[in-house]
Image (cartoon, rainbow, N blue to C red; front, side):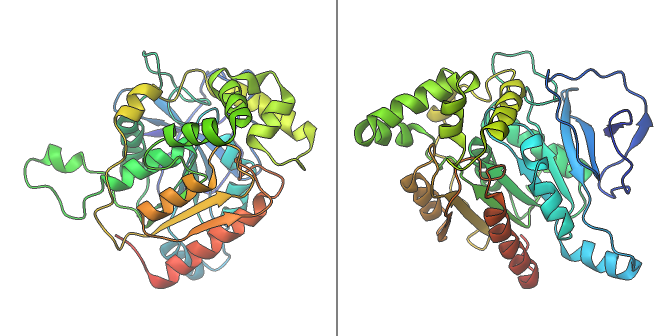
Length: 350
């Protein structure tokens, strides 16, 4: 059950997918620099089977004055569920993309994985694994969303989405009810945004070491040593375009520093479990989007993901790795919106 914190949430229309319990919570912010929601957004907490609460930022698709038209549109447009990568949380989607896609008629849900943002932390050294993170997403979709959504993942969040879609089964597994409940709910499609490729990040690292040793040093220092948290120029070079204003970079640097209280993965164990399984359903719709100025995921990494799913890649000019909060975020959002609208026209759904 998801509950809403009425102390910090503006009044918004009720979502059919989430049951809202009106209660005043004494929940303290986990982030020392809390993210302030925009108008029309609400912060929810989905209770997982583990008993831990997962933060969800929600923004309903733009309402229509005609109830019949609103019903037609809500039936047509699948909900969108956004999954962040390392050093980020649900706020990175709420800044621009949740308002953009909600204004275009899509109900939007941005999740903060465990140990990130305002979500609870597990009693472990790392936040989880591909399996546990994907399982948490599946639990949220199963309990809170009625229509098959489109799952969108950024960076390592894209790798989690890849694991999720590889484990969808079109037919129920024969056996007990418990086996059927363990299935990942179906989706209407998936969007991989500057995603770590199916083989993981080791190929990216080795290519950088041999072809761009200085870049390899900077990426390692920025991410592995978390130097992006204290160096504004390095944070900007790692995540953003050169045209990005330093004031904005400093704001996001603070939010990224506060978002990740523990590592998203144990990278050694993660790489040992890769590549992700190949997608069983060739008809499943996947969009692979990258950024021309991405300092983390290179063109070969982007193309590897496209080849894996047998789809052409879309590379957006003038944006960097943090494509959803970079100064030219609208370019990529518009490209994804066009794909979503074509997906709806085709009536594609697994």
